[in-house]
Image 1 (cartoon, rainbow, N blue to C red):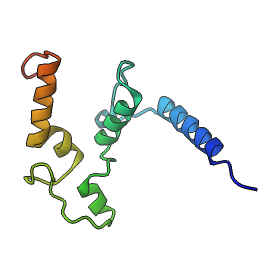
Image 2: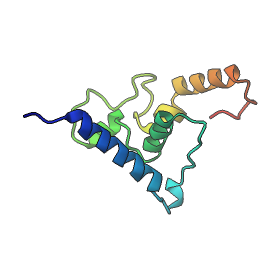
Image 3: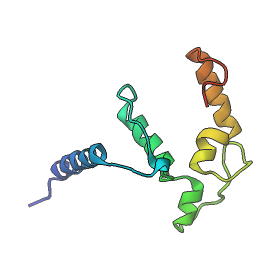
Length: 111
């Protein structure tokens, strides 16, 4: 007599998806347009980054989880937040620049 976790997982995931589809954020800071061409997992990471819900070193530290340092392990220049990780980190800027070159985006168009 065991619990069928696969069934629970399917129910959980379908309910989560339904909640995401029905979510309405009225505050301008939470407005995020879901693009159909973006894979859902990428959209969810972006959504969590906007809401500061990614497990960055700073957010883990704020939840009283022991982290060796809250500094960014990629550059060591600033606190590891979602904004720093994806936008202001020098390493991230090089990645975005490389991505922009790869897709031939106009200069300054990519983050």
